[in-house]
Length: 208
Image (cartoon, rainbow, N blue to C red):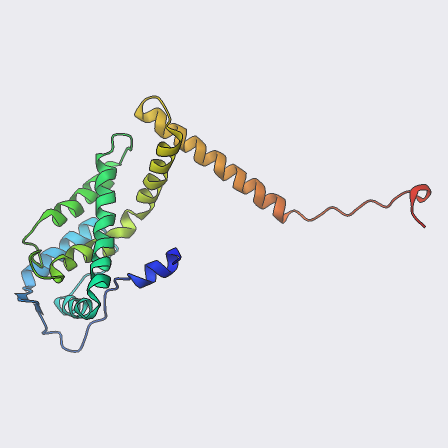
């Protein structure tokens, strides 16, 4: 299965509002206005461009998740929690310099995931981690570029084993990225360059 197909299989999309906006029951938990407001406030702090979430949308999403085969539903949640674990490793890696703003937003995200009694308590069967997974999904654009760079750095560090200080190891990765980008650009230039017209052969060596 290719990456695109895999992403489609485990997609977690916020559903549209239904006509019945009074629905608030997820499992045995009633979603209160104050709890939903706190969730949205945190989401806005982590990722200001993320959409807000209503109790009705959470109910719809929870029911959809419960209708999935068990292993598929677990995979959907695990993929998001796995992203958060990657983010946590990035924060704790002394070789990687995370900016203060990104670090604070990532800290807010990972702190929420460590809470047991959050918007949907974690002890709820299956849906207990739905709010955690949704928070990761909706806020991920704020971290996607940096976590992708960090993953590439980790691969470089594991394969090339650069020496020196943390700054020197990261500089070695950056230089490798620049060299790779230059090589790719050179290949693009070669492919896009039209073949030069062959010069006309002198008459005395033309084949007749």
